[in-house]
Image (cartoon, rainbow, N blue to C red; front, side):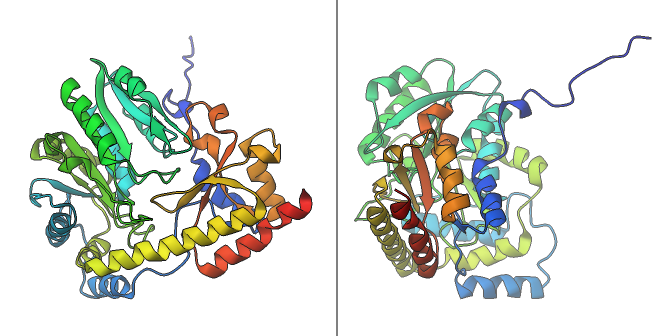
Length: 392
């Protein structure tokens, strides 16, 4: 009898590794390093949200919410999107609440992209986008963002669009560089999407974390783009609740129906009491977001000052809460080697830049710092980073 032998691991799973960002957190815990790697705050969320979540649990909001999201939350999201972006969204047909923006992106890709179709991704990119494309059987088509301003080349972008292009992913404000796409850049992308009948998937999770008077432009607000844009967002970053896993998708009714079906069988639904607490978040006044941006700008400037003292070159972010730094002057063979040195010998965890590129060698001279931390955390990290001066 002939025994059949086959591999136990899918070809999809063999094409990517576990998250490098989350691995850096594990290493930080192992070596007692200060975690400036993973993008989560080490300070409390607003007390109003704690109270709202507690009340939801005490009021027995403990069972499944409707699959595509608690009705009160969907209506609150629609009201908030109207005042902030000026977009009229039907909460019954155009909003899907998901288990974080991470699930929102993969649900969107699985609901819209067929095997062999291409998805344009700007590089460097948030590390999930590559595996997401693979899991959706899509072919990623990378377009470079060029330092120091992380702009794209118009000719290269135009060349990336073709008959196989199904969608383009835009992350603004951008992780890891802190770039905020301008209205001019987004208008060009919008023109190409309409010319080639392409969808735009926009990850706008950092929409309120902006610096130096920079404005956030939502792709769905541009002429001709509301019906072909899927806007992805969530509570995690704006309200300092990354562990709550409440995200949401805005899309026209046809796209929403498909996304809701996939979401249903991926996760059924996000945590019901935390969705109800999200209603309170959506009702925060505009002053909350102004204060949030001011708070993060101070944190950004503090860390930039520390990096100046140490002599680490960087790109000044205009949004999000990361600093992308250039470590070329330190003479290490790779970003991995330098990151391991920082964790084990200096006591500060960062993310190696190669995790944001399809070809790792493109990221060997970069690392990413996260500054969504308490002032004392950043100060302690600065003290440790000063060891680099003594070591040089």
